[in-house]
Length: 399
Ligand code: HMG
Image (cartoon, rainbow, N blue to C red; front, side):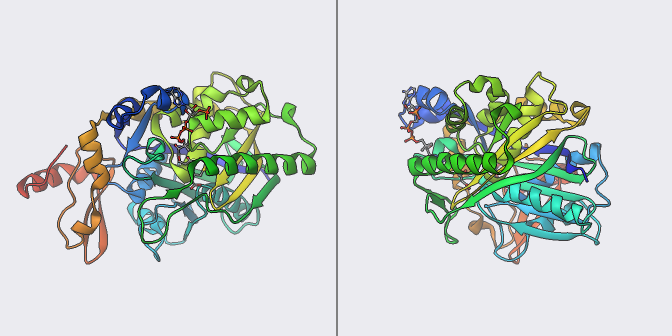
């Protein structure tokens, strides 16, 4: 049975900070970020968005080309959970008005849980436990102001439809995986920012790639020449350039620039980052990958990794969302350092008593309106005009 990705769409907040601005504010040579890390911009989440709104905003765009009525499993992968108990996907299930005949679960293992969700979706479909799976990967990468990790922050969500006879890519069965208890990156429950041992985490990322790639080759008999392109988890573009080099010195052959394009402008989006790379590779390369095999490496700190492969399906280009994604990226609002720090420091705990969350005009189709009785209240963009009037009256700022 051929099972894989039938459609995908990403969403990233409508605000960004140029890395040049960050470098000047932090008294760092801008070339360190632009050339040394290969990062140009970072997406910045406004106060009235979170992983739920980003996920719903990514999924709502799928409705232009797909029906979600028969989705019977919704997997929500994130490491920026908004609740210790309730799956964030249940809010999205409600916002999208999905069928009651649907399982909803949240997955966690750092950046790896998105790819694990993909494998889980495929096996649910193959074993006839699900017909159509909506996989949403959504994250807001936060390391802290003026930390070494700050330049690799970002935010995005990718929504994917997994079905039989997929029109974009089909997964192959062989996969190599590997886990080991490490403390390269983690986020204790009482913190909203990750603690990271940056250089160590890069070493672990590359070591896990070496291991899983070796196991994959040993078990499948496949080698570099059996692949047309590679797709990696992208925490920092420069690290992925090193990953290409580790696999093969002639990395330009494997469409490195197409893979990294979106991430250079968005930054790390943890669980979503691998799929942002896949979108970038298929949408930004002028090559026709029909029938070709993509090598895929996912890494999640802590640490688990997986190497697997997908075959690109005929006419896949017709089912991509390139115009919409480019429109999103080209119509973002540039922040200065002051506004970026205000957005960053916004503390939801100050708003749990039911007062409205400051309304940013440029939030997506869905936004977080308030927290009332500790419950998050989300609203449609179509109501935004009224909400704007309301927040002006209440003397909240609008930007
Ligand atoms: P750093 O200490 O800021 O940077 O950390 P650096 O000093 O290592 O410099 C970076 C590069 O810039 C070097 O190039 C420098 O030479 C160059 P390289 O030697 O690597 O080729 N450089 C310059 N180039 C041009 N002009 C200059 C200049 N100065 C220096 N003037 C680090 C970088 C990535 C460690 C940091 O950003 C960080 O801690 N990021 C967060 C952690 C991270 O992303 N780790 C990646 C692997 S872990 C992972 O993938 C999992 C994760 O996604 C989480 C999850 O799984 O959930 C993070």
